[in-house]
Length: 341
Image 1: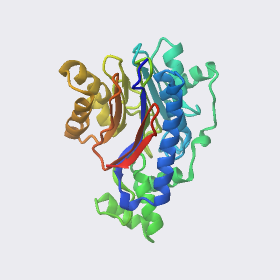
Image 2: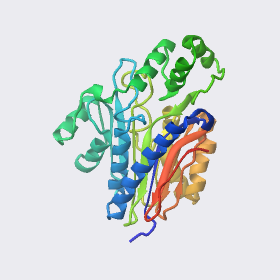
Image 3: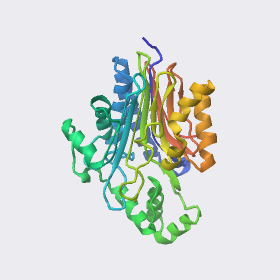
Image 4: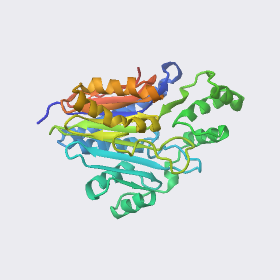
């Protein structure tokens, strides 16, 4: 049995400023991350697989309205929600993914059924929902994913007539609450002017959620889920459900879950690149992840981060933004959570 069993999670990265976040909000985020980590930790402690642990962690993140996945997902340009998720087993290299689903309560659970019960890897839209229905998974009305905060972000994004990377809209929403002329301030923000007390910088908040784990049997797994970007065009798909971009796992190297500017992570095949560098360059997990996040992604203005674990229990959580909601928990130890650098 492996004594280094561990789980790590993320809930999005971006310009998250300590001076701009209220103490109560900070406490709420830490509590949510801690609860998810504790649940994943229990799965591992009871002898559950890494696949079980990341499934449970991401399911809980999908159910938490603080994060952009499941309940609390952002709105499309049509005022609906379209969700993506992926999961991968490092022991078998089996993977499952879905994208553009509108009525599945927990996309990560559908992705896992694709992994376990389908000869395919990726289903989209109506086909993904038909598969989920055949598997007896829970469906909800699209309005289940609504939250007041996300709706307000969407309304402000529509006023600006542009998509916003996840919680960019939170910046505008905060400004609208704090100033009498939200439109004027939004215009200043679009030009790059700083806004008073803005919690998140424009175009610099990415809300994908994810988890990676190493179990007591020495196997790794990864899972990622998202609601996409605020005011996105219907049918847009980012890196999250693409194996190798938003999610990757291989017992020979590591498990990775990413969060960031999806198009850039796709172009760099970011999650797989970490594993590939370990395999071909013979570098450590820390070195490989650092190179991808700090060197390769910035070349094409890729912003965000990732969480990763290798088969020795090493964990890394690098990001090239000012903050990332993140944490990890080893067996027998208290979970560690963090937000800022």
